[in-house]
Length: 72
Image: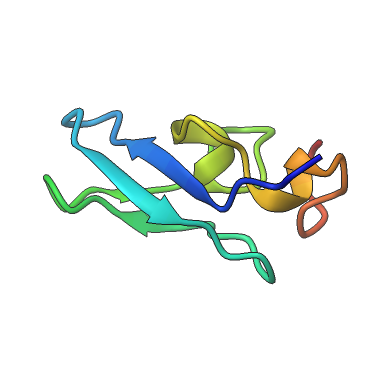
């Protein structure tokens, strides 16, 4: 399986869409929306903002691994 490193993140506050490169060595717990400035945090049970608000989960979750001790 090939791990996808880019993801399309959508802000739940304003709907702004941004393509981002996901980190492979750490979870991204906070994300500043480039549309409205809202600070996004993961939903309960998710390890990072990509798993909550993006079209592709973070690389460790794609590989069926634990992401920084979060849920998978």
